[in-house]
Length: 426
Image (tube, rainbow, N blue to C red; front, side, top):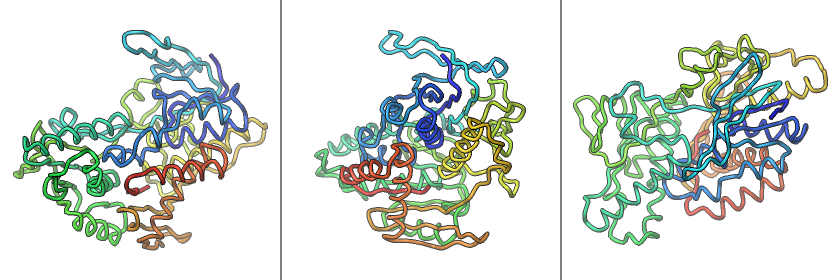
């Protein structure tokens, strides 16, 4: 197999690049490789976990996207890379003991690695074994089914309620805590008539920093904390988790009972990146220059969470969806100029922070919008903030579905089918 442009990873940035480039150059020139068959916008995973969003409503088939956007889809995980020979190895796919797809090798002219991130447990004993991290749809489904099982036992009076401990007060942790409380109406749909959400589903959020949502303005953090407390979520800040086992979380001298523990305290680049023969930084991310090319390899690029890209202030670009979106657009312009034999862009990628949103239900949201002047931001809340979030989802659908009309219809169906509203920060 061979393709001029090969993109590994169908997350927000990788998929947007494949779709936009495919619509320009066609399936003979553009190929997307991913180890899963469906794309879901990662900020939606906590809703799948809470049971308020069906993954089959939000999930988009890579095969369908490839057909509609003019790229080739290859199903399988990245296994090896020969940078000198420009050769990528994609692993076999097996199902029920049978090999569905054999191992394949793909030759490329340009390679983009956009494989995202995985959980960083910081060496906490028991964290890997006894927690769930919302990195993929199967993680969210595992949480949902575990919670459903525990709720059933509580309904039958075989358990004294459910204790959920969420470790990490960043975007994922705060959103999941809020969504779980919003999901209380879903419990009745399963026939749980005896359960009282605030009494029987106890949610504790643990954060090591002095406040939740620490990277955001303090006003946003304070508003989010107030909204969580209104929803009977116990928030403990300034605490460090030291051990986790099957029934509890220990933070110093305090022990929190827990039937379900979610790890949302940090991310890192996938470990396999350090085996590819490419330069990485201490965090395991691929070391890229200002053009997003991996240093020392002008034919290999990286974007999103797996790329260590320095901003104009010298700090690494944060692992956020808006960064991946911007980087995908930068590489799109770079590759199209190369195709047309035009000179390079002549300027490096520069990250633009447009702010963040945290929504807590159908009408209540909080967030900050960044101004064009450095350091200037506006606090937004309520219905306006909610509509701004919906527009972010719309822009993502527009990028991968091709037209505004198609994207509007897709998001409209998505919103109509929902059982409870969105909770988002991205």
